Length: 316
Image: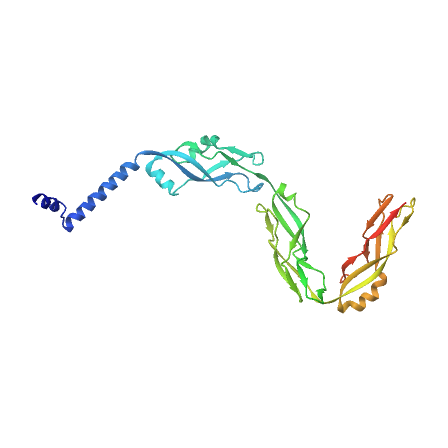
């Protein structure tokens, strides 16, 4: 029993004694931490990375590496702060000839970066290779062409005015090699919908795989008037040009044409039908059989071609 009492009394402290024990424990912990952090250690740290080049003349084709992993040695306090992201220096890699450099081997960067680490010593670079794609900066103006294939009209309605797109062009700025792969006109896709009234839509100018391009402007507006329409079928006389004099040919002297016109222009269209003709160009045609769509001339601006027959031409 005496032994048990001694053991119990050993762990009986009043509140003042417990505070003293806690303070002693904290003091010991702080002393141990200070002692440990004053030693030298090695660890891997991710540093922000920046490439230094003339940004007025060159532009990335794809995103450049924005950080680099480096195994470094140094004071415990410095490594602790940097491992938490505090006061991390931005490492800079200069590029004197940006378009000629395609990749940088990580092991070659230690001498370049060693004087940028504020007292830390580089052991080795963890990144195997940094891949870089830079090109000459260029700009070009492209025409905008609206695509109405997804827009449909309520029965008896249709487009009764030309399509107005404003602005009708966009300036693209970016890598020269990428700009040269884009066609002269950029198609603007309209949202699928059924309309029976005047159309107006703000449309984003979308270029596939264009993360490296700047658009000016980024959006355009497309508008046209919608109203009652009618479909007219008619026969159009064919005029032949550039017929080779050395060969005989047979061709159809008229072609079927179907157009859509605004109902309000019906009388004007029927009065102007005699001025509409089909032009068949025989330039550079040798002996043989050809299926050719003629060019319609004299068609009023408000008339939209729905269908047009092709012509079979045989040269002997």
